[in-house]
Length: 176
Image (cartoon, rainbow, N blue to C red; front, side, top):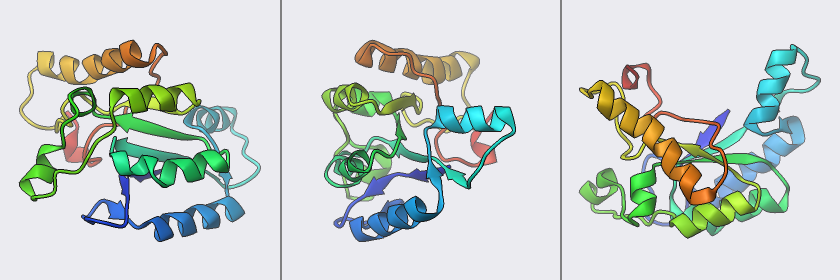
């Protein structure tokens, strides 16, 4: 599973790659891997059978620039992918605090963007409400709000079940 955050040619940061680099990676993957949905990957793991090397594409957070190049490229080539969304930022159309602190208040997707993606068949997954570090000092109630609340927020917005969750920061210490 390859997880991307932001595909853009301006205002780069540690989790941004250029459009050219992304296109090159996707072309390389297309020539060597079956690019499948998370559900298909799960089915293959469960069955114990997989004829070819397989990969899944995901995006974390919900950066708006991905709609300008990366997502149209994947849709054009009919490559399935999942967008994991931190719901409070999308719902309130505000940049992530870490981007603001770095002096780069980068645009995030809107709820309408997320609805359109879901309508186009893109899998939408939960990524907490506030991009919380789930390994931090959170109460059980806060954990439920972040995880379950994010899922419910998205389901209400897109009127579809949300089947997947990706925890922010991606390291073992970011889990409880």
